[in-house]
Image (cartoon, rainbow, N blue to C red; front, side, top):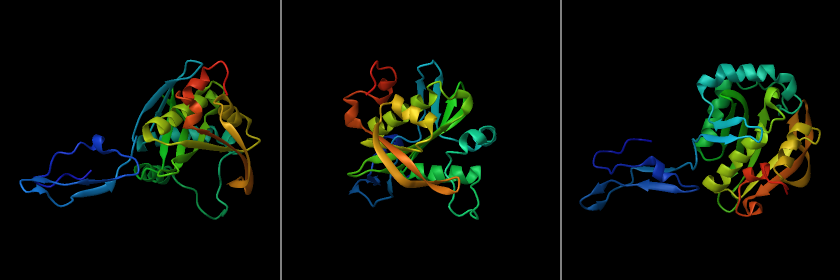
Length: 245
């Protein structure tokens, strides 16, 4: 945040993080408010570090990725290439170059700063293990987002991904103020389908030719949850509830 000019009041940036809002900061003078010196939209709930414990007892941390994560991130993606390739989105134009880690990080940082995304890296036991990204965040009367995620094969099946998705969703609902979260999954992706079913997300049916994967436009099944469906609780509560909806 820019430094106030001489004579301006001291500004607490943390107190100015409002959703879908414009903030005007004026210097305090003896003659009353002066001209606007700062005018921009603030991002709610970002950056943030979230912590949770999976049903199996794993300590799960969600945090922004950094430039220092590049070696661990690239190693993790390389080691899990065969595991993730059937589900990773691809470019319809094969001549279009893939993004570097730096380009990816710049994009997600820009989206987060603009309030359009909550892009988390996932740590398990202190080591990077995957990502969960809440994207296409729209406020106003819509207040919704899409969720995408991946997890390393070494920790799959231990409840890490449902725990991470629930933590991100609860942050989006109760801190950012969103109303609805949607996840779209290939019907053949049993591991990813297990995540949304453990959390009791509603099945909203097939979206035909929804996303380009492995050279073709693939159908996806859409799942969603609204904050009202939680009935005053949190999505994370469904991981330990005896009867998940």
